[in-house]
Amino acid sequence: MPNPNPIGVFDSGVGGISAMKEIRRLLPAEDIIYYADSAHCPYGTKNPAFIRRRIKKVAGFLTGLKVKIIVAACNTASIAGIDFLRQTYPQPIVGMEPAVKPAAALTKNGKVGVMATGVTLTGERFHSLIRRFAGDTEVITVPCPGLVERVELGLLDDPETERLVQRFLDPLVSSGVDTVVLGCPHYPFRLPLVKSVMGPSVPVPDPGNPVARRVAQVLEENDLQKKTKENGREFFFTSGNLATVGRTISILWGDDEEAKVKLERL
Ligand code: DGL
Picture (cartoon, rainbow, N blue to C red):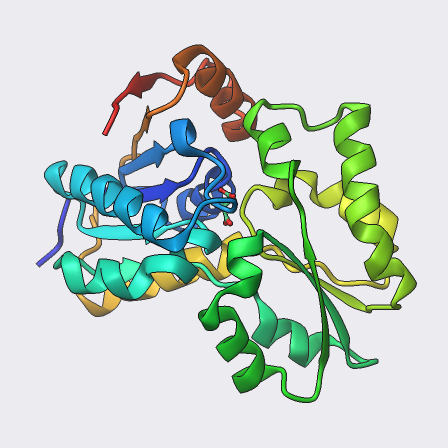
């Protein structure tokens, strides 16, 4: 049966908006509820047990709003707790993983760089991804402390953000990787800078698109699409500072109007 209920998307903060934009592009009729857990951002410096407690609350909040699917638009949350979420909630749950598999298929010189948080890069799920899909590939990982915080503040183009991105990319340039994985949805907001530093011959696949395609596929397989013609709506909630998060979401979502964000402390 077609299902008019919304899609629930969450992230440690505003980064998951990059994946939500792709979901909106592929599924224009669906209503989408986004939760930014900005009061607890970044997740990447917290321990996995703390992250699981947070995402249980966030997924519980979205479930209370009757979402028909939950999208963990956060690599750190997915690595730390996607199995736990699937055991806890009845809806289909789509997570996000660094695109190691497509990168291993794209690389010509066998060297791939992965930018992500420390929790993602040390997680067993990430190592299992490498073992399964990139056994013959040299994977150079770069934790990027501080970058998520800049994006949270909407500081995309300022010199300090550019300096940070340059610094994180230095080891990837010097080790000669020919493909770069953005293992965190905050990073695509700096995609043009990453591309300009790495050069035109280095693919940097957009991590949001595979998530959106998976959401569309799961909705179709379970006959959960909305199936109406009118445009879907977006609803934003955050645990963080309303003024700051509201301003940043407006910048990242790119609507002419200021995004209407509600405070919801969980
Ligand atoms: N969105 C998170 C991720 O994908 C951002 C990082 C963080 O909260 O530390 O890893």
